Amino acid sequence: MSVETSNKPWFKKFKPIQEWQYLKIKIWSDEDLQVEITELSFRMTIQQALQAIFGQSGASCYINVLDWNRFQNEGIIKVKQSELTTVWSAMLHHQFLIANKPCTFDILSSSAHLISLL
Image (cartoon, rainbow, N blue to C red; front, side, top):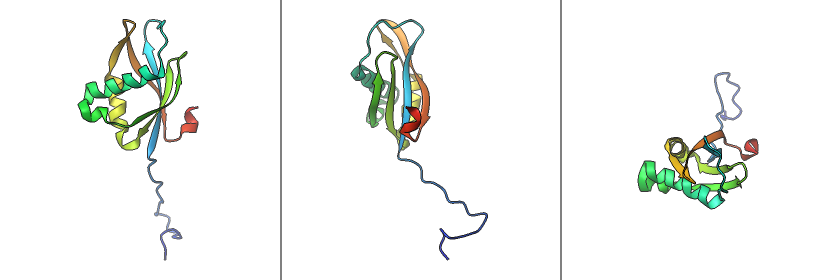
C-alpha cells in the first residue's frame, strides 16, 4: 500500500516549505524625505543593516531586489527561506539617516508567493 493512496484519516500530507520568501518593504521616516532614493541605495542600505547586526556572515545573505518604487519608497525583495529570520531581524533593528533624517525599514507584508504582494 503506497503512502499517497492511503485513506487513513490521521494521515496528513504536508506541503514542502517554499525555497524563497518575498518581502514588501518601505523606507519609513517621521519627516518627509525630499530626496529620491534609488534602487542601488535601497539595496546597499539592506546590506548595511545585515552587516551592522550580524557582521560578515549577515552580509553574505542572498537578497534580490525585484521591484523598487522610488516615489513611494517601497520595494519587494526575494530572500532564501533559511535566511528569512536573519534578514527580518536585521531590518527591524537597523536605523539609518537619509538626508540627515532618521529612517527605518517597515516590513509591510511577507509571502511565499510573489503574486500576493503585487
